[in-house]
Length: 155
Image 1 (tube, rainbow, N blue to C red):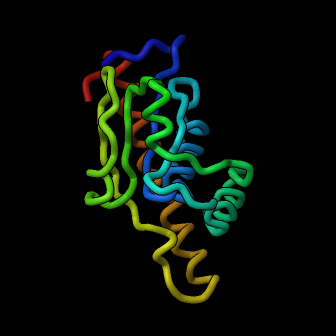
Image 2 (cartoon, rainbow, N blue to C red):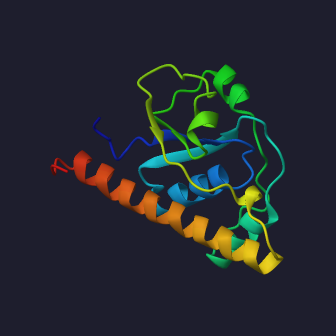
């Protein structure tokens, strides 16, 4: 797939509740590679934003506190086209996602679920920071690969 730098490609990140992983992935992609992509996120069963995810992203200089959770099926029904749909939950949950039309490439990047973390608030916060950093690293590598391919450099 060739990316025209004048036209942003739409990317959708999906997880279970759209409360942490998909929200962080959306924010990171828009932050790291926003000149090429317009990221959105949604969940299979939308919940409320995870306060640990909000805090972890604020620590990294990105504010997601005003984001709302959305249902993936509402996004699907809208008919919007995405170049990539990326599930960031476990594989069993990812299989429940709808198939989007168009030239969508489906990717799965499994990350631990912040809502499943146990321990003290500081232990949970440390776990969310780790997940945040793993998501950022994955986004950075993926953006670099996609940008190199779009420039004609073999991967």
